[in-house]
Length: 454
Image (tube, rainbow, N blue to C red; front, side, top):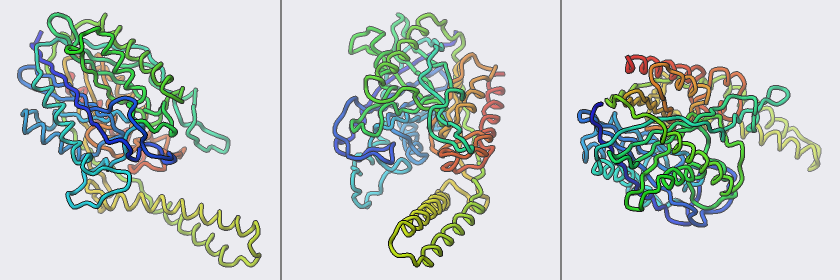
């Protein structure tokens, strides 16, 4: 068995109370306190020749520029190559609102509901967790296992007239398996856990105004407490969100529900690891794979939307019937037209302003990162991958366990299946990349896994 070293650490993010919260467009009110601490959790593995760092951060998402900042800081302090560092958001919807794509400039104006100084400190706090984990390296062995778990449910329900609604679709695909990795000291005591499962962090709804890690936080608490270690030797757990682009919890509502399901997953993962064999060969390999994904062609939709807006405006201009119901109806029609047009124009403006986008080629540049440790693989995806695509990656025959980690080192938005583009719906409407991009990502990942597992 190859020698292996592991280290873990946690650094609290400590967002100030009273900030605006992210994750729900219709949430009313500011943060009212802290239910459970948001933090950055990190695991570093070292096989004596190669190192890898994996961080799970309790925020909605983190863009490339913030992830690159973290990776640069970590590299300068530890020597871990940037391509061997995975910065993954847990995707809780009970976190503070901030610019997930870049930290504020020094001369930025104050923003209502935000704390710019706290935002500027985020990369340093995440980097600190990884640096501390690196300083904590000690001899270790690894175990990997899976356990049945079914909180997630497909959320794209086809209504009559083939309209997609965000609602539970019990006949749609979902992942019924949680993945877990444990790092153990020579005496058998656990020093870190890594858990992976696809389900949005939205058990807590828009009426929640407390900072929280949502259900993954309870999973982390449970697996740590199950170890029965003293506070000084309590293991650190990291949660990696999976391919959750079209997956919501089948039960939602309050902290009691979040705790019920989170603890069930944490206990199941702990028990599965207790009976799992050690990973025989722990050689580490990493690979960063550039992705140049085509943008959706918005030209035809924009033309239709502009025509609709012009027609509803003309109807308003031609109205001669006073202030009755017909006027209200025409105003409603025009407001709907303007809303649809505005959404498309905002998407196109986002493309124009994005440094990752080549507008001449209409391509968005990003990357995926793959880490292998013996017969285990972790595939870091830079967005919200649909579960069907995640299951396809997990099915690779080249590794015994394959984690699919979403929201990793970048955020390019939703990554739907090709079939979903024909159906439409929220995820497709807001996606920036063209149909077939998800399948390109899957095929690229499978080819790389085949080569790395050879």
